[in-house]
Length: 603
Image (cartoon, rainbow, N blue to C red; front, side):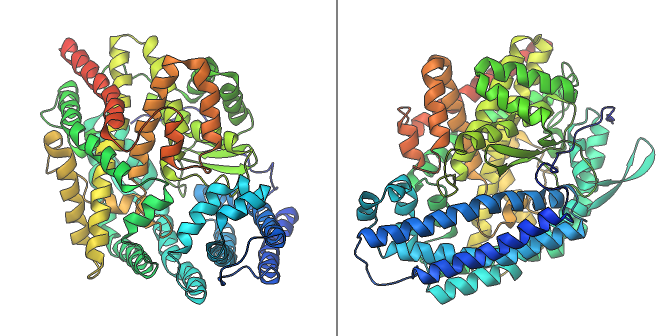
């Protein structure tokens, strides 16, 4: 088991407030809570609610501009204070003060959800096209208004929407927090190198990247046993959240939770079907990769715990400082703006990289204020660790591009939220390949395919699983055993014979926090969209780099201001047919071909 010999950074939040107990934080926290109530008073004064059809005139346009201006200013401040509080919860879920403040803020935000619903309902009663012509502010928010018009057709009555918002705090919101708290605090008991150890779940899951197969299998078995112990409350959480989403989707007139998800993600069913069709066509290629990896690892067939195993040769360690230096150098090869963003992130301690008890697993990037972000990672000294850093810095670059927009204009759908992260990850992969020998190339190419396999194959399994859960949850709650069986079946249908059928992961439904979001279901297919869209854009960059750069930044800054098809059309891409997605997957197929050749050459 590899040990960390380098101190990894924690993010610096003191540039915002000295701490949660500081007077400055408490003053702003109180002001935010009061501001939500003030906004409610403004809504009441301007009569922003479901009403009869209204004539658009100068007076109405002024009312709109007042309300939207106040809303944007509140959202700007709220983003910072919410990110500040969550930075403590995400890195130490046992922090009782942070949990209390987050709970208090979530309670206050139910009013904001209600106000947002009132605004949507009010806009639904207007001729938004006339409003766009009558107001510069409305014209700047044209896409937001047009989406609100559609969403207004899927609202319950105002009292019902207000009640749903209030109940979500003790309903799906509470169940979601339970999953987050439980999964981040789980300690796993296992024997490693003859010693009995108790490690946080995040550290145990990181053992999947270890070179020693016995260590990987030990961690896998201990992980499954621990999820088994907590299966009852986690199954209750999942059932409660999916049940709530089903009820609300039906009451709001959506055909299904998936239909609402597609609307939220600014794509249509034709786009999803085209992408999934191309993805399914690629399953045999990914199984080809899995068989080649098994050969490289010297085993007959891969188990679940082998998927993240490093290649036996060429998988050198990437210390944190070396990784950050490599990223800086090659982000600079793309352009000075991207390099400067990464430089700020490293120098100003935007990144929390050290795995530790109480810290949530995985990685994410969140906006903090204006053009500033914060990145959580659980860094491992490997190429994958460096690649993940590049991925999250891509999100930070996207936040930089969005910083010129208002909060309402910045509401980017998940489908487009992965664009910059995938692009930055691809930059690092291509540059790392240039200086690597054959063994190093095998390692780097395998890491890229491994990531693509997760985003195409595993995401497809998650989409299938979640669709089945939503469908069956209409009739009754599902037992933990049934959830496990659905998960195993979805893995069988996607991974096929690429993995040992006896050694899959029945508890992925417990692992992935994405299943436990009430407000945003199907937190899966957008990742596939993001990967393949990002790969397609990278190909355009290679063809015309200078022209691409300006258009790319414009695209990133407009991801909350147009749907995916319109933005793609700016690069002459039609996302409603499988051809584009097949072309992106051809990039992955080329990597798989290269990997197979390298494995064969290595004997």
